[in-house]
Length: 222
Length: 222
DNA sequence: GCCCACCTTAATGCATGCATTAATAAATGC
DNA sequence: GCATTTATTAATGCATGCATTAAGGTGGGC
Image 1 (tube, rainbow over the protein chains, first blue to last red):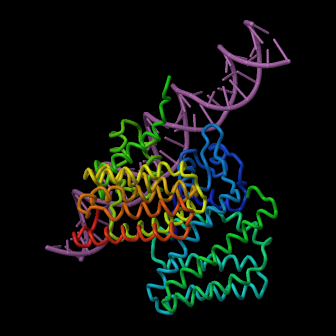
Image 2: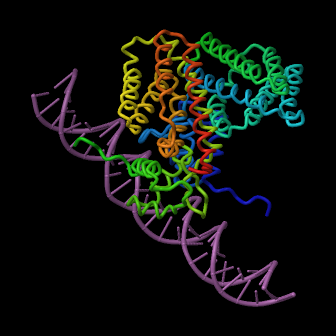
Image 3: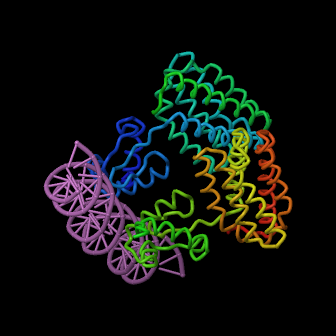
């Protein structure tokens, strides 16, 4: 038997995450435990456990008697999250450079960059976003700090919806690709300071673009 | 009726945290859910919920069939955590400086510094550690990023035991106080770069002292 | 007409019990 | 004696049911 069934509790976590990301569970909406339990065809117990876990991940909020609220993201939230990402990812970039990886270890990073460029040429923003995510994930992995990996993962999850919604409203991320390449080179060359500072600036730019966009569109919640 | 009883689940969280910090639940030890339930005089359900939450905070680990394991800290863990604290706290320091707080808003910070100095004069390390914690907490609060506050809180919790054990093995933290004062002044003067860099160096030094100490003592787990 | 107390409703927090299944011990074959 | 299978044990994952209690509605007092 190939796949042993995961526990209902695990399934609940994954299903709920997926539905939050897809927007099926809309930001700001409230849901009773029993409603979610019906939806997932299981009892309230594993749902409660999943909800507890996801609350810890910052994706939703338990409001006793009012139901589970899917957390919306304000521009301030976005700003906070991008600041965390900026600091932790640039640290990871610095460490990745210090580690003097062999070029073969940077394969995944290079591939992500290549994919992003190809996606831009093909004007495929979805593919670009996917490759961009891979780049950042891989960068953080190369940084070697498991706590940073998990924090960055959590923060990225929190902005995931907003990222997708704004993807098509943003200017084409040409500059982004140059940034990535510079960071890659610095890491390959073992230039920790450049890797750190380049990535830092890259993330700060990304934050500014996003925050300005939200301001211009008067988007208060996503 | 003054205090409405908190839920058992909340109580379980607090009790377990307290017992983990105190060492009553020793690092590396395993405990059955039923054992914890007996200990806290409640059923397994709220204990399970608490355990799920604390797992999310990185204080323990659920190992199905093997019990709940109180996570020990390796020197590598300490190193990871201090790196996260370094990055996020120095960002907070930078922001606190940028915010141009009135001197009255920096009262708590100044008080913490004064308390640390008094504690050092009185050779009261416990009091020093307490004031040091207050300084860092307040600094992060002034930074104004709620996510950084909660992440720093989690990371600080994770090193809490180790911090206490090593407190009396470390050289007297005289230099620390100078650092704190410099950071305070930079914040008061609105010098964001200095605030950031000073605090950064401060944390890096703290990390080095701790990691070196652990290496010297050949401590593998705390 | 407004405010407060009471009541109704139903969502949650939690205890309980059971089926499942991993871990260990026992037993069998080689 | 060792390896492999089988049996035993017991911890967990989960469903269920109930007591509690908050939220909102209702009615009465002023």
